[in-house]
Image 1 (spheres, helix red, strand yellow):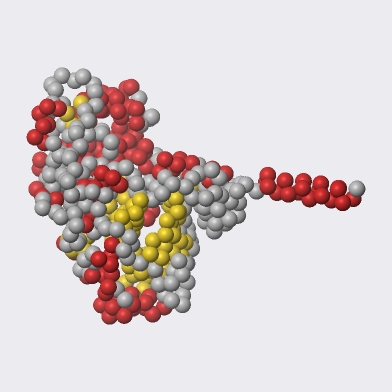
Image 2 (cartoon, rainbow, N blue to C red):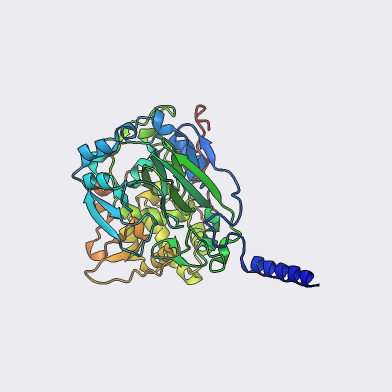
Length: 468
């Protein structure tokens, strides 16, 4: 009788523990279930067009195995500790004094590259540092980013350097990026961007763009939304590059041992410019040949425009009526009374007056003047994009600030006192004209009457040698 009672008590306790502790509770992130799905793997950099159409546009991560071993990336062979010390030893680099990321601690300091190389193997720190012009001379732009618009919208090239065993927050990035590993091994846990709302539901730091969950010991009671979200797990090693689509939540664990990576941040490119002269004659099987030192990084105006263009990534062009309908449907805060203003915004962007908005017009619009002229509607647009309440109220002699993710810096848009009309700006300040793939057929899209339907232009034909 006593033994039966003891068994009953033990079973009851076990049942209560199971009920109280959901799967993955107090285990490392990913301990709640087995990974699902697959991440595609290639043995070379895909051509820019294939990269855009199959991975960027479809928001599909991609692993490129051992591409640095056979590609023209001098740093892959050169950047030993000795080389970094002898060639860049006097450069001031930024160091975080903790191997587990903590964006609220403020434990940052600067030191020379030489001192870091001397100390990093024995000290609890890692380096996060934007490549200098001198360092860029040792790097060529990966083939996949060499044309079509990618090369014009690079945000930054960041170096990550440690003795390994570093752990990031669970976070997402507002930019696409390609992470190339020159040494070491990294493990990534990915949550598809379609689960972003669930990831952000509890414990999300909106200003920092990360979850406050402890990635080494997940409290599934405090973060119940993580219990059922499927995820992907991938490990990359020396010589590999990984494409991380924007808005995919992810956690990165650099394995113990020397760990050196450079990632290329670039704005999400909603439309591939197949008429780009840089694409002419590009062989998808050639090595990377564009030195980073020859490229110009984007300025704050490009940043702001690209945020705006995120709204239209799946749309080829608009008629006037369909533009306002689309904006009403996509942005809940826009009401019926805003339609007249949206029609004015359409006409502002439609420079040639043909009642069709094309990507060359969207890419070349004067975003500063548009925000100044229509502050209410653009405030609603940017509040929707960023998740923060943003106002473009005019303040004389002051700038209007748009706050981005902490790790991407702040985007600043000048107020009207400093704005000049697009036609008065110097040619050097204007974006390069962007052509759609079927410019020769564009006349077929133009209808002077407004029928209120979206216009979907045909996608460019694949080149026969551009195969996955």
